[in-house]
Image (cartoon, rainbow, N blue to C red; front, top):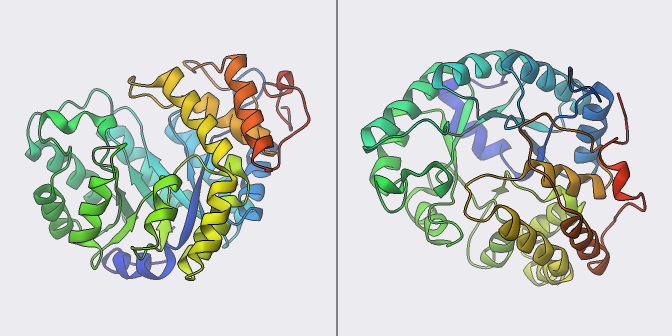
Length: 339
Protein backbone atom coordinates (compact mmCIF):
# COMPACT_ATOMS: atom_id res chain seq x y z
CA UNK A 1 0.00 0.00 0.00
CA UNK A 2 1.07 3.60 -0.59
CA UNK A 3 2.92 5.23 2.29
CA UNK A 4 0.99 8.51 2.02
CA UNK A 5 -2.57 9.68 2.59
CA UNK A 6 -4.73 10.40 -0.45
CA UNK A 7 -5.09 14.04 0.62
CA UNK A 8 -1.29 14.36 0.79
CA UNK A 9 -0.61 12.78 -2.60
CA UNK A 10 0.58 15.96 -4.32
CA UNK A 11 2.98 16.82 -1.51
CA UNK A 12 4.26 13.24 -1.65
CA UNK A 13 4.86 13.54 -5.40
CA UNK A 14 6.71 16.82 -5.03
CA UNK A 15 9.11 15.14 -2.63
CA UNK A 16 9.37 11.63 -3.99
CA UNK A 17 8.51 11.64 -7.72
CA UNK A 18 12.07 12.41 -8.75
CA UNK A 19 14.40 10.93 -11.35
CA UNK A 20 13.50 8.70 -14.29
CA UNK A 21 11.07 5.85 -14.81
CA UNK A 22 11.74 2.80 -16.93
CA UNK A 23 9.12 0.38 -18.26
CA UNK A 24 9.19 -3.27 -17.18
CA UNK A 25 7.38 -5.75 -19.37
CA UNK A 26 6.46 -8.95 -17.51
CA UNK A 27 8.23 -12.18 -18.36
CA UNK A 28 6.27 -15.38 -18.93
CA UNK A 29 6.95 -19.09 -18.87
CA UNK A 30 7.84 -20.76 -22.16
CA UNK A 31 4.30 -22.12 -22.49
CA UNK A 32 2.88 -18.66 -21.62
CA UNK A 33 0.64 -20.08 -18.88
CA UNK A 34 2.20 -18.24 -15.96
CA UNK A 35 4.55 -15.46 -14.94
CA UNK A 36 8.29 -16.09 -14.93
CA UNK A 37 9.35 -15.09 -11.42
CA UNK A 38 13.10 -15.29 -12.02
CA UNK A 39 12.82 -13.21 -15.18
CA UNK A 40 10.76 -10.53 -13.43
CA UNK A 41 13.10 -10.35 -10.45
CA UNK A 42 16.10 -10.13 -12.81
CA UNK A 43 14.57 -7.17 -14.65
CA UNK A 44 13.54 -5.26 -11.55
CA UNK A 45 16.97 -5.68 -9.97
CA UNK A 46 18.72 -4.50 -13.14
CA UNK A 47 16.39 -1.49 -13.48
CA UNK A 48 17.30 -0.40 -9.98
CA UNK A 49 21.01 -1.04 -10.61
CA UNK A 50 20.95 1.22 -13.70
CA UNK A 51 19.80 4.16 -11.61
CA UNK A 52 16.11 4.33 -12.36
CA UNK A 53 13.97 5.52 -9.47
CA UNK A 54 10.66 4.17 -10.82
CA UNK A 55 9.38 1.67 -13.33
CA UNK A 56 6.03 1.17 -15.02
CA UNK A 57 4.75 -2.40 -14.69
CA UNK A 58 3.44 -2.69 -18.23
CA UNK A 59 -0.04 -4.20 -18.51
CA UNK A 60 -0.53 -3.99 -22.30
CA UNK A 61 0.64 -7.59 -22.70
CA UNK A 62 -2.38 -9.88 -22.17
CA UNK A 63 -2.02 -10.02 -18.39
CA UNK A 64 -4.95 -10.44 -16.00
CA UNK A 65 -5.59 -8.12 -13.03
CA UNK A 66 -4.71 -10.98 -10.69
CA UNK A 67 -1.47 -11.74 -12.53
CA UNK A 68 -0.69 -8.04 -12.57
CA UNK A 69 -1.00 -7.99 -8.78
CA UNK A 70 1.39 -10.96 -8.62
CA UNK A 71 3.76 -9.08 -10.97
CA UNK A 72 3.55 -6.07 -8.64
CA UNK A 73 4.18 -8.14 -5.52
CA UNK A 74 7.28 -9.74 -7.08
CA UNK A 75 8.55 -6.34 -8.16
CA UNK A 76 7.93 -4.85 -4.72
CA UNK A 77 9.69 -7.71 -2.95
CA UNK A 78 12.68 -7.48 -5.28
CA UNK A 79 12.99 -3.70 -5.35
CA UNK A 80 12.53 -3.03 -1.66
CA UNK A 81 12.09 0.64 -0.89
CA UNK A 82 14.52 1.93 -3.50
CA UNK A 83 12.38 1.69 -6.63
CA UNK A 84 8.90 3.14 -7.07
CA UNK A 85 6.28 1.14 -8.97
CA UNK A 86 3.71 2.50 -11.41
CA UNK A 87 0.46 0.59 -11.82
CA UNK A 88 -0.53 0.66 -15.50
CA UNK A 89 -4.26 1.32 -15.87
CA UNK A 90 -4.36 -0.22 -19.35
CA UNK A 91 -7.04 -2.90 -18.95
CA UNK A 92 -10.10 -3.26 -21.15
CA UNK A 93 -12.81 -1.40 -19.24
CA UNK A 94 -13.13 1.16 -16.47
CA UNK A 95 -14.49 -1.50 -14.13
CA UNK A 96 -11.56 -3.82 -14.87
CA UNK A 97 -9.06 -1.00 -14.34
CA UNK A 98 -10.64 -0.20 -10.99
CA UNK A 99 -10.50 -3.86 -9.94
CA UNK A 100 -6.89 -4.11 -11.09
CA UNK A 101 -5.74 -0.94 -9.33
CA UNK A 102 -7.26 -2.07 -6.03
CA UNK A 103 -5.34 -5.34 -6.29
CA UNK A 104 -2.15 -3.50 -7.23
CA UNK A 105 -2.54 -1.14 -4.26
CA UNK A 106 -2.50 -4.10 -1.90
CA UNK A 107 0.45 -5.66 -3.77
CA UNK A 108 2.70 -2.64 -3.38
CA UNK A 109 2.16 -0.16 -6.24
CA UNK A 110 3.09 3.45 -5.45
CA UNK A 111 1.34 5.43 -8.19
CA UNK A 112 -0.95 4.83 -11.19
CA UNK A 113 -0.49 5.81 -14.83
CA UNK A 114 -3.93 6.34 -16.33
CA UNK A 115 -4.50 4.98 -19.83
CA UNK A 116 -7.82 4.70 -21.67
CA UNK A 117 -9.25 1.54 -23.30
CA UNK A 118 -9.48 1.32 -27.11
CA UNK A 119 -13.27 0.94 -26.93
CA UNK A 120 -13.62 4.11 -24.84
CA UNK A 121 -14.87 6.47 -27.55
CA UNK A 122 -15.80 9.83 -26.02
CA UNK A 123 -17.36 12.59 -28.08
CA UNK A 124 -17.39 15.22 -25.33
CA UNK A 125 -14.95 16.47 -22.73
CA UNK A 126 -17.49 15.56 -20.08
CA UNK A 127 -17.12 11.88 -20.95
CA UNK A 128 -13.33 12.08 -20.62
CA UNK A 129 -13.77 13.92 -17.33
CA UNK A 130 -16.24 11.35 -16.02
CA UNK A 131 -14.03 8.35 -16.85
CA UNK A 132 -10.97 10.00 -15.33
CA UNK A 133 -12.73 11.12 -12.16
CA UNK A 134 -14.36 7.74 -11.58
CA UNK A 135 -10.97 6.06 -11.76
CA UNK A 136 -9.30 8.63 -9.50
CA UNK A 137 -12.13 8.44 -6.96
CA UNK A 138 -11.80 4.65 -6.81
CA UNK A 139 -8.14 4.53 -5.76
CA UNK A 140 -6.06 5.88 -2.91
CA UNK A 141 -3.00 5.92 -5.16
CA UNK A 142 -1.53 9.05 -6.66
CA UNK A 143 -2.42 9.25 -10.36
CA UNK A 144 -0.41 10.49 -13.34
CA UNK A 145 -2.65 11.98 -16.04
CA UNK A 146 -1.56 10.99 -19.54
CA UNK A 147 -2.70 13.17 -22.47
CA UNK A 148 -1.45 11.70 -25.77
CA UNK A 149 -2.88 11.23 -29.29
CA UNK A 150 -2.99 7.44 -28.72
CA UNK A 151 -6.44 7.84 -27.16
CA UNK A 152 -8.01 9.61 -30.14
CA UNK A 153 -9.44 12.42 -28.01
CA UNK A 154 -8.58 14.91 -30.77
CA UNK A 155 -12.12 14.37 -32.06
CA UNK A 156 -13.18 16.31 -28.96
CA UNK A 157 -10.43 18.95 -28.86
CA UNK A 158 -7.38 19.41 -31.13
CA UNK A 159 -5.08 18.99 -28.10
CA UNK A 160 -6.85 15.82 -26.98
CA UNK A 161 -7.03 17.14 -23.44
CA UNK A 162 -7.49 20.89 -23.33
CA UNK A 163 -6.12 23.19 -20.64
CA UNK A 164 -9.71 23.70 -19.46
CA UNK A 165 -10.31 19.96 -19.06
CA UNK A 166 -7.05 19.45 -17.19
CA UNK A 167 -7.95 22.41 -14.95
CA UNK A 168 -11.27 20.78 -14.00
CA UNK A 169 -9.60 17.46 -13.30
CA UNK A 170 -6.91 18.96 -11.09
CA UNK A 171 -9.55 20.89 -9.17
CA UNK A 172 -11.77 17.85 -8.62
CA UNK A 173 -9.25 14.98 -8.33
CA UNK A 174 -6.74 15.78 -5.58
CA UNK A 175 -4.85 12.53 -6.17
CA UNK A 176 -3.82 13.59 -9.69
CA UNK A 177 -0.23 14.48 -8.86
CA UNK A 178 1.53 14.57 -12.22
CA UNK A 179 0.97 14.98 -15.95
CA UNK A 180 2.77 12.87 -18.52
CA UNK A 181 2.54 15.64 -21.08
CA UNK A 182 2.35 14.45 -24.69
CA UNK A 183 -0.54 16.39 -26.23
CA UNK A 184 0.15 16.73 -29.94
CA UNK A 185 3.05 14.24 -29.88
CA UNK A 186 5.57 14.34 -31.57
CA UNK A 187 5.21 18.09 -31.10
CA UNK A 188 6.33 19.54 -27.76
CA UNK A 189 3.51 22.09 -27.54
CA UNK A 190 1.49 20.03 -25.06
CA UNK A 191 4.42 19.60 -22.71
CA UNK A 192 5.21 23.30 -22.77
CA UNK A 193 1.56 24.24 -22.26
CA UNK A 194 1.14 21.92 -19.27
CA UNK A 195 4.38 23.26 -17.79
CA UNK A 196 3.24 26.85 -18.30
CA UNK A 197 -0.13 26.36 -16.59
CA UNK A 198 0.35 23.67 -13.97
CA UNK A 199 4.00 23.29 -12.94
CA UNK A 200 3.35 24.88 -9.54
CA UNK A 201 0.54 22.44 -8.74
CA UNK A 202 1.64 19.04 -10.04
CA UNK A 203 4.79 17.36 -11.35
CA UNK A 204 5.17 17.84 -15.11
CA UNK A 205 6.85 14.89 -16.81
CA UNK A 206 8.34 15.09 -20.29
CA UNK A 207 8.88 11.37 -20.93
CA UNK A 208 10.60 11.64 -24.31
CA UNK A 209 14.29 11.83 -23.45
CA UNK A 210 15.19 13.44 -26.79
CA UNK A 211 13.00 16.41 -25.77
CA UNK A 212 13.58 16.45 -22.01
CA UNK A 213 17.36 16.83 -21.88
CA UNK A 214 17.57 19.80 -24.30
CA UNK A 215 14.58 21.50 -22.65
CA UNK A 216 16.13 21.21 -19.21
CA UNK A 217 18.37 24.14 -20.09
CA UNK A 218 15.20 26.25 -19.85
CA UNK A 219 12.83 24.19 -17.68
CA UNK A 220 13.06 22.80 -14.16
CA UNK A 221 12.06 19.15 -14.44
CA UNK A 222 12.28 16.76 -11.51
CA UNK A 223 10.90 13.62 -13.15
CA UNK A 224 10.78 11.98 -16.56
CA UNK A 225 8.84 8.87 -17.41
CA UNK A 226 7.47 6.47 -18.23
CA UNK A 227 9.16 5.53 -21.50
CA UNK A 228 11.42 3.16 -23.41
CA UNK A 229 14.87 4.24 -22.25
CA UNK A 230 16.30 1.39 -20.14
CA UNK A 231 17.57 -0.28 -23.32
CA UNK A 232 20.23 2.47 -23.29
CA UNK A 233 21.32 1.20 -19.86
CA UNK A 234 22.28 3.91 -17.37
CA UNK A 235 22.52 6.74 -19.93
CA UNK A 236 19.21 8.44 -19.21
CA UNK A 237 19.27 8.48 -15.39
CA UNK A 238 22.83 9.83 -15.56
CA UNK A 239 22.06 12.51 -18.15
CA UNK A 240 18.85 13.56 -16.40
CA UNK A 241 20.64 13.86 -13.08
CA UNK A 242 23.41 15.95 -14.61
CA UNK A 243 20.88 18.32 -16.20
CA UNK A 244 18.95 18.64 -12.93
CA UNK A 245 22.16 19.59 -11.13
CA UNK A 246 22.92 22.33 -13.62
CA UNK A 247 25.52 20.35 -15.56
CA UNK A 248 23.56 20.67 -18.78
CA UNK A 249 26.54 20.76 -21.12
CA UNK A 250 27.79 17.45 -19.69
CA UNK A 251 24.29 16.01 -20.11
CA UNK A 252 24.28 17.10 -23.75
CA UNK A 253 27.60 15.37 -24.35
CA UNK A 254 25.94 12.11 -23.31
CA UNK A 255 22.86 13.04 -25.34
CA UNK A 256 24.80 13.26 -28.58
CA UNK A 257 26.86 10.17 -27.78
CA UNK A 258 23.72 8.01 -27.81
CA UNK A 259 22.18 9.61 -30.90
CA UNK A 260 22.87 6.57 -33.13
CA UNK A 261 20.80 4.40 -30.76
CA UNK A 262 18.09 7.07 -30.55
CA UNK A 263 17.92 7.34 -34.33
CA UNK A 264 17.71 3.56 -34.79
CA UNK A 265 14.88 3.40 -32.26
CA UNK A 266 12.95 6.19 -33.95
CA UNK A 267 13.35 4.69 -37.41
CA UNK A 268 12.25 1.22 -36.30
CA UNK A 269 9.25 2.51 -34.37
CA UNK A 270 8.07 4.71 -37.23
CA UNK A 271 8.63 2.12 -39.96
CA UNK A 272 6.97 -0.76 -38.14
CA UNK A 273 4.16 0.80 -36.12
CA UNK A 274 3.91 4.38 -37.35
CA UNK A 275 0.33 5.60 -37.54
CA UNK A 276 -1.21 2.54 -35.89
CA UNK A 277 -1.55 4.02 -32.41
CA UNK A 278 -0.07 0.79 -31.04
CA UNK A 279 3.23 0.48 -29.21
CA UNK A 280 5.32 -2.54 -30.17
CA UNK A 281 5.91 -4.02 -26.72
CA UNK A 282 7.77 -6.96 -28.27
CA UNK A 283 10.28 -4.51 -29.72
CA UNK A 284 10.62 -2.79 -26.37
CA UNK A 285 11.28 -6.12 -24.67
CA UNK A 286 13.84 -7.05 -27.34
CA UNK A 287 15.59 -3.71 -26.90
CA UNK A 288 15.79 -4.29 -23.14
CA UNK A 289 17.14 -7.80 -23.76
CA UNK A 290 19.98 -6.27 -25.80
CA UNK A 291 20.94 -4.33 -22.65
CA UNK A 292 20.94 -7.38 -20.38
CA UNK A 293 17.32 -7.70 -19.35
CA UNK A 294 15.50 -11.02 -19.41
CA UNK A 295 13.71 -11.03 -22.75
CA UNK A 296 11.56 -14.07 -23.45
CA UNK A 297 8.20 -14.74 -25.11
CA UNK A 298 5.05 -12.61 -24.86
CA UNK A 299 1.46 -13.73 -25.10
CA UNK A 300 -0.62 -13.21 -28.22
CA UNK A 301 -1.63 -10.85 -29.59
CA UNK A 302 1.96 -9.65 -29.72
CA UNK A 303 3.67 -7.74 -32.49
CA UNK A 304 6.78 -9.13 -34.12
CA UNK A 305 10.27 -7.64 -34.55
CA UNK A 306 11.70 -8.27 -38.04
CA UNK A 307 15.38 -9.19 -38.23
CA UNK A 308 16.26 -5.97 -40.05
CA UNK A 309 15.09 -3.93 -37.07
CA UNK A 310 16.89 -6.19 -34.62
CA UNK A 311 20.10 -5.59 -36.54
CA UNK A 312 19.65 -1.81 -36.71
CA UNK A 313 18.80 -1.53 -33.02
CA UNK A 314 21.83 -3.59 -32.04
CA UNK A 315 24.10 -1.53 -34.29
CA UNK A 316 22.69 1.68 -32.82
CA UNK A 317 23.83 0.61 -29.36
CA UNK A 318 27.24 -0.42 -30.64
CA UNK A 319 27.71 2.90 -32.46
CA UNK A 320 26.73 4.75 -29.27
CA UNK A 321 29.24 2.87 -27.15
CA UNK A 322 26.47 1.51 -24.96
CA UNK A 323 26.33 -1.97 -23.39
CA UNK A 324 24.94 -4.61 -25.75
CA UNK A 325 24.79 -8.40 -25.44
CA UNK A 326 26.95 -10.63 -27.60
CA UNK A 327 24.25 -13.32 -27.56
CA UNK A 328 22.61 -14.07 -30.91
CA UNK A 329 19.10 -12.73 -31.50
CA UNK A 330 17.78 -16.29 -31.47
CA UNK A 331 18.41 -16.31 -27.70
CA UNK A 332 15.98 -13.42 -27.14
CA UNK A 333 12.82 -15.48 -27.36
CA UNK A 334 14.20 -18.01 -24.83
CA UNK A 335 15.18 -15.35 -22.32
CA UNK A 336 18.02 -15.18 -19.80
CA UNK A 337 16.02 -16.93 -17.10
CA UNK A 338 13.87 -19.46 -18.96
CA UNK A 339 10.91 -20.90 -17.10
